[in-house]
Length: 149
Image 1 (cartoon, rainbow, N blue to C red):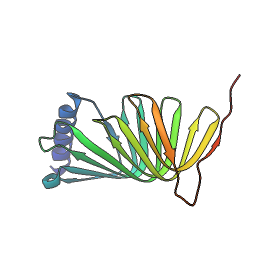
Image 2: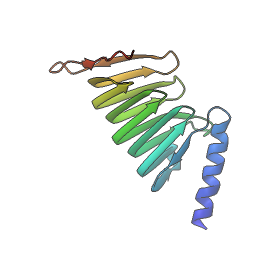
Image 3: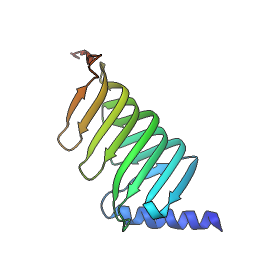
């Protein structure tokens, strides 16, 4: 009975999301807090939307009050994000699907082709294909750029 409820709820939730964008999330566990419009996915989490894939230990999705759109997705623990040829690893991340921006924090490693950038924070504008990387005042951004010929 409970399993059927969750399957029905997820079907309704993802059908509503499909009007704007479709996000598929797979995990070991799902906790739903209806009063706050929050879904908490934990254990081997994998989420995919269009050409953006996210892996993490825990993923918290916040929906609008009418549950018709996803307002924010937060990933925690061993976060890996892949979008086309760009791969970003970090401690935690926040994805804003409305603005199509991705924020990754912690020990961040950015890989594109064979180039590597190490920093503490990256903001990726997926709409305009631009990014800003920064580090704490104690550290600096490190980049190893390799040109492929």
